[in-house]
Image (cartoon, rainbow, N blue to C red; front, side):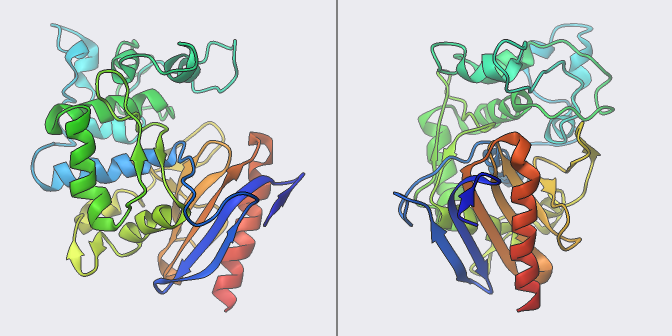
Length: 305
């Protein structure tokens, strides 16, 4: 799937099955060493980071989210749990539309300041009022992810401490040597959108979940936390099923689930095929279904092999 008018541009297609690459293709000017944008696939990496802290007893997903902006007496947002945030159901008002001039909160958070993010991305999102009762309505929000990331920073330390923790506890054990997260001015990983990796390192991340949280026989994440990535908790406005910062894959094997990023970034975990599929590129939103269809063709070929 090199690309074209119906798919946009594909920069990388990598398929790993039974622990080895069976397809590895790159676009013009890109090779195995090129680090490419995650966009919102970083949200799923954040799910893993939270899981490490939950497994260690340092965060409680069912407890009130530790957000300073919500600590005032009688603030209704104090009822929001970390689990509400992970499942995109905090009830906060948020517009995720990527259209300039349409009141987009995500554009204001990431790009409005001379194309740089606001100083405190988590604080920007935490300042939004409630639009619905916490835990009741799914509203996909990059701001919600940065609230979660700021919570992680509050546990492990911001900035350099956060980055070191990610490298020592998550990226390093997986072998994601190229992983480059981006931080805002207060030291929060902008995990809504930014972790640059090679295609192989995105695949390594997918294999962490494919192998039920194991890396080389060593348990990094609990099976119970990996399970939260697979169970749908709601759907967005277009009917795509969201889990906990992951998505259910559409049209392939029923056990498939995936990371998804703006402009057609995908890391798809396929347990029944013992495979991970990574696609990176630049595809307009209106062509998304074409890319999904092509990827499902690749997946069907795997199943028939």
